[in-house]
Image (tube, rainbow, N blue to C red; front, side):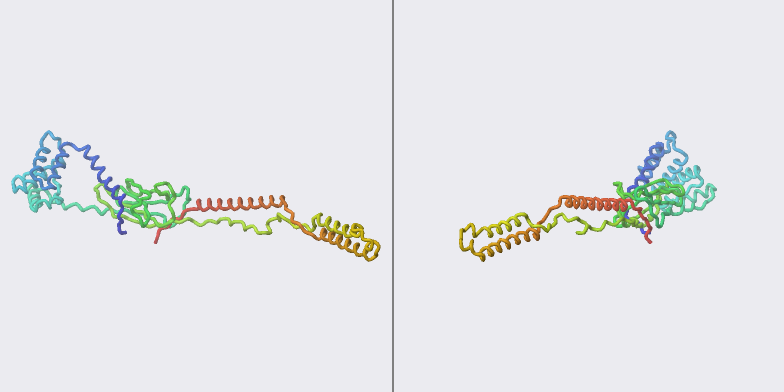
Length: 368
């Protein structure tokens, strides 16, 4: 796959490449430091400075090893070739070959076009067999294996990532959103000899479970020769597994409640009293007014009694057929309790459903 620009991976690789070198320099001898400094001067084309450093490295009291002496003599031969001092260059080549008959100088050929020719000539003069150049090591590569489609628990689940470099190497593993490579959510590095398995807990750096979406798993390796493998990137899709949730209870209807008021088919006692009072007044009116004709006439008596009767009957009818509203505190309390139970039940269902969704397994599948 095409490499992606990975900022953190580059930083980790830089640390991996530099850290061993710093550790090695701490243990280098003085002669080794002088030879290394001389090579740096050669790279900058400071040949006179390189010659001074090499001369000091080859002094008897510097404790140069056989390998350090070989390197120093070859670098010195190169300096003499640049100075066009061919006899001194040939002598330096012989000094190097006397310490390592299998020496190769292919990596130095770009310094001077005569170096390889003079080197092979001196090798032949010393009767040393010409060995073929060592085959270049195979390109460093790393394989990435992970489950194609799996579901893991949300609280303790781990997604397995297996890496296999083709030779011992330090493997770097990164996880980031597919569309935001710079946002590193998880990173791991380890020295791998063979197969190594790491597990991502599906969480970002802040410890929160990553949201559903597309994520990239990228791996890269660097070996002891500082050779870096191509980056492998695999896109995985993360989603939550659907769970069965409880439905909310049906809404309360008007029939669910008891009536809090009622109409009573009975008039107020005042209606009855008014009707009876009017009837009594109608019956006593002739007497009260002192009308002899009315008092002596039968027709007058009948009329007053009729009026009194009608008024009394009207009062009794109004009392019997009238209605009034009555409030029921017992029913009101029962309805309030019903509403509270319904609300509590709804909140319980909502809370339980949320817990089910939060704890639902996480599905991770490789995007094809």
